[in-house]
Amino acid sequence: MLPNYSPESPAESEVVAPGEVLRVRQEKLTSVLHLVSGRVQMGILEDGQMRHQLGVVEGPFWLDGASAMLNLPCPVDMVTETRVQLRRQPLEAFQRSVEALPKAAQMLLRDMAIGYRQQTELAVSRLAQDAEARCAQWLLSHAQEDGSGALSVTLSQRKRLIAAQLGIAPETFSRVLRNLREHGLILGSGNVLKLPEPGALQMVASGG
Image (cartoon, rainbow, N blue to C red; front, side, top):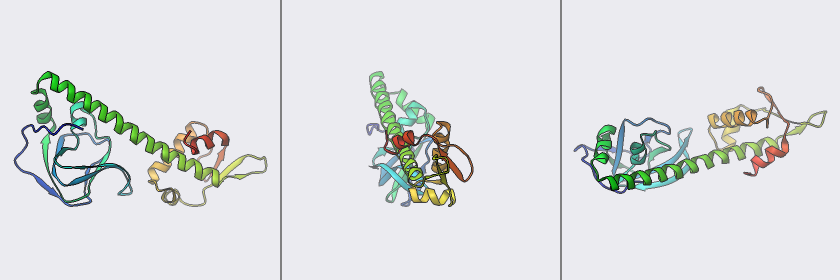
């Protein structure tokens, strides 16, 4: 993230209880959060729970300074792990503070921000691949041959229940099925899904 330099911040601070959501993935920023004290989890929320934790930060720390510098949405969900104290700075004021720094410092901070974003987006992408692998494994383990020797899966449970078994959100399960369908690895949109390419689906299941 960013070094702990301190542009002018509002005098007032907020106190937030544990378990509160501070940022939601892909949320467009209008302010920047400076964590004065306490700990915050970063990761991916599913059904209101931090299913995939990418890290924990402790104040003092700029929670979304990298995204603010690059004018990009927040790449992860952020949830308070402990009681925290934080300050909100308007996005424009934060960016003006950065622009007031020497050019060399601006370039250094921008490079660090780009590196942080790339690492975070890669980690989130790998978690998505993990969800695909789990879904592919589930499909293969529940597949049965029909009369012609082809494989198919009957969804005898609601998708939200299947998603709960896999430890992912229903929205994630639906998205993975859509991606597999777009790649021709499953066919059908009802309760019966055909698996025309079990070998390719096995590669997905193994993370290949």
